[in-house]
Length: 400
Image (cartoon, helix red, strand yellow):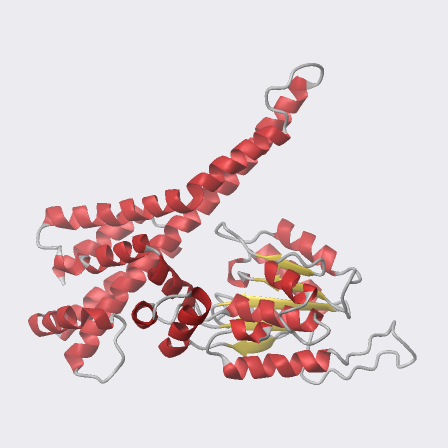
């Protein structure tokens, strides 16, 4: 076993990263001896860009690479170094992820400043940015400057869906070595669900076949009954749009399901954070200085509320996006079946429904419905009010 066993269905990428980690073990720094400035780095470089479709394991691969760089044995997955890197607690590996809609410059500058120092326990300072596509323009500029003038012991690992300028600026991309991940095969995902998560073979095979190549989604579908019920409700939408009343009812149901998921995923955490803040700010205290402490507590409470609202907004968008991806996959299957193409189905467990929809409707209507779903995703990305975007979509789905 090694840290690379966590990277599912990416043999080419793993081989490339392993080679780079092996070369990195022989890099000589200016401060280490008479061979000043000489490096035997081979495939190693100071900045990497991990790209791939959602669920392909970009951050998992980047984290495994960070462990391999720091581990004396190249990522054994058994030593303290590997365990702390994978757990996100290693002193010289700085992970940046956002639960909001964007990564701001203030957070990025703080991380870059820490990473510019000499490592404390390992050979490298590693900065892992999980959501590089969510960086604001100012944050991107801060990262660009750090990548252009890197400390010799600092490595940047950026993760983004693609190399498109909308995800990563051209200037940053040009200074990074690209590593492209692919959608894992369903057989590889099913094997992981069985071996790592203890899921029975039948459930693992089903979850892997309907997850769209998204490992995290497959795990949720295999283990979470609520996730399966939400998927069932979404895939029932095409059959429940017989009248205008049902159109708006379907939109309301989708929004209610997203709201329920937000409460389930963030409700307890939000409450715990508020209680923790109240305790840390001396809630209920008396005596000298209480008024000043209360003013500080109010400011901290407002900042916490802002962060929680951003997290709730992103959680709701992500929930709606998963639903829209399922819908898009359904109409894509209808279109494929309408053309009689030999292509793997997105929802193989809906084969009979898809067959009937393709027989009863035209290919043109299937395409228009698919485009309506994709247009709704784009509208949500541009901050259109979710209720309006979803209602417009289901209205177009009924019209065909």
